[in-house]
Length: 101
Image (tube, rainbow, N blue to C red):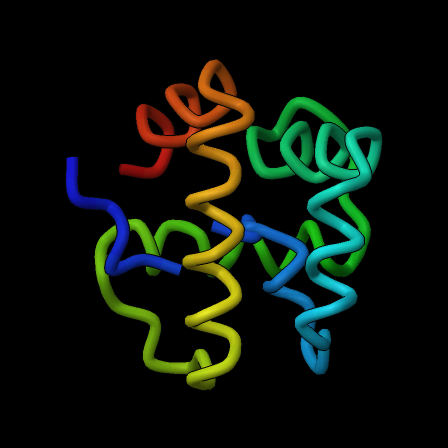
């Protein structure tokens, strides 16, 4: 499944947050508890913070290959995040693809 045109951050994931730097993204990806919280939000299995809400809004667009309101940086970061989730959270990734793909 070629979902990686794709932005994730979830948004993915943390990348879906406006004005997030690449180093902030890497810190978020490295924090397992934050990632699980964002994944639960994206899957509508838990509460959402502003990052999670933005991710949940953008993820379906990204998974479908278009996010007209995303900047180049957001698109790149969301792609990075979704690739990370696919590799490191395969169970959650499968649920995301079923739900949004």
